[in-house]
Image (tube, rainbow, N blue to C red; front, side):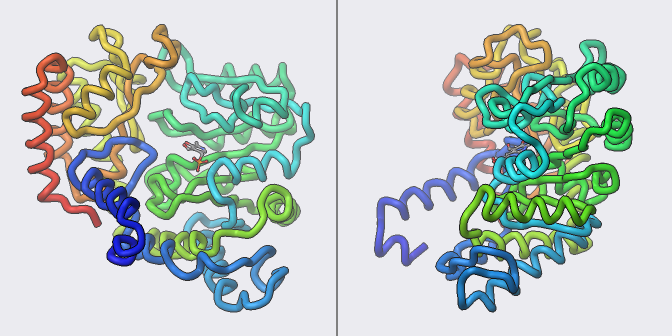
Length: 411
Ligand code: PLP
């Protein structure tokens, strides 16, 4: 930080300001976390200088002997962590990992059956504004209106009708366990590939608090920066040798050039941390915290989509209280609480406003917060939303939040 200050005070100010923001706010964005200082240091290291197109021991550049070790460690550790036979750790992001999967076995115009973004899916699962929606013929499945959980029977029927070449599973805003065994049965019944994007729940899977997709899916992708708590980036895993070869060719040279070796080293550090016994405890606590927060918000009169959560996140439907996601997230920002507005399945609110908010616990759990703090956070959310027209109420909560955060420093 001192070096940056000497060379570039403007950017040093940004970094310092962001550090203070992260320290002073309660971070409830479900896709965010606080990577360890070791992860950050590896990512900020001299490995950023190295070009290493290709794979360990098969590079197009000289001088790769050290970065080869880093990439091999990342591969070996992530395979151990998820019980996978093959891994590609080079995707620059989750979206790049997903691109590599689609391009590896699909042709433009092929049919894919994917989870609707409005029901919790991700843009890269066939949204019309994304490459996945432009290249392929997309049909969406979603949750049932009755219990707001994935409707596997409807999905099985759709699969028979559509006969897709690939079914995707995984979500950005789905609070329940995903039944990968059932998804695999459905995919097999129509001869489709099953592609599981476990970006949000990868940490939970690694910690054994969500079933693993590894034995069911042809392809598994993830980001490394969400519940897994590593650097920003992506991975692709598979147990099938022929698919692993296709994936390697599709990551490089198919969709990327030189891998980010500093990020790959930071991924290796993250996987090492995730292999330690304490990581399981961390993941268990994430879920306990999410359940405590959801229960308390429910007690305070908020409608939690699907009635609760099995994982690290919940969706809070604010429409019954005459609110929308935009107003709520802006109000909570003033109170030092960070969430994102989110659509609710079968939303009646405009997409730009969102019928609710998505609330997640990976980041606050990293700080060491537990159920008692979740109860307090729920009370603040309620107080802030009720007092949204009163700046003094929001200011008071903001200073209480800052006090609490002092007891739970960033890693
Ligand atoms: N897949 C899922 C399920 C996600 O939630 C996300 C990120 O929000 C991604 C993929 C994309 O990851 P990235 O932002 O690294 O491209």
